[in-house]
Length: 228
Image (cartoon, rainbow, N blue to C red; front, side):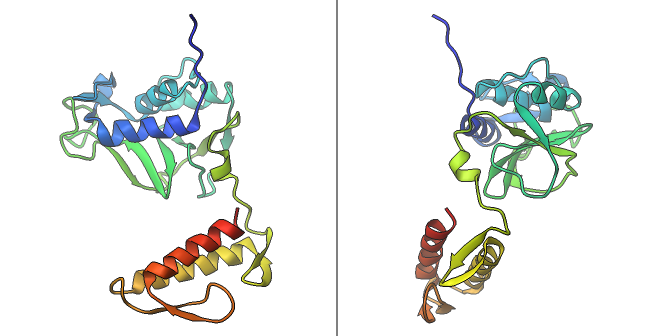
């Protein structure tokens, strides 16, 4: 019986996270296809290509960062400008030097460098950071490669654009204003010394004095109801 794999962006993200966090994977360009969760090796492009295949994507003859774009854009991926706002599942590509995957929440998964600080090393992650999940940064990326087919994360990434109108706490404004308002409230939470500190927060009409715990609840509820 033929088994047909259905390409899954969520599976792609899950596999990147698995190999970078749970598996014991080192970095080595000379041993780059050694995918052994007990003690393996990869480099940045072999990791991405391997995870794409595990998630059901056709990668053609892709083998390095240099041929990744050509192979994927011929198979349902689009080359999107680096605007600093990747979607979960976007492949962050510097055509000559590096590739990583944006997994959401401001985080990327990647294979970085061996335990020697170079391009070759022993199997397994000797430093705890040869393969890693880290905060998003600009390498710089020449582009984001974005899947254009059916996307099982579509509901999570189809966010409104900044200029879209929205009614925010009874005021007709834009999504950009609402997001800035959320940011200010989250900053206030960050300035609290502990969970019982009082902060000022107005989720609707009037201003309430609440603890960060309840303010966070109200922010979440407000976002869920008004930005979906």
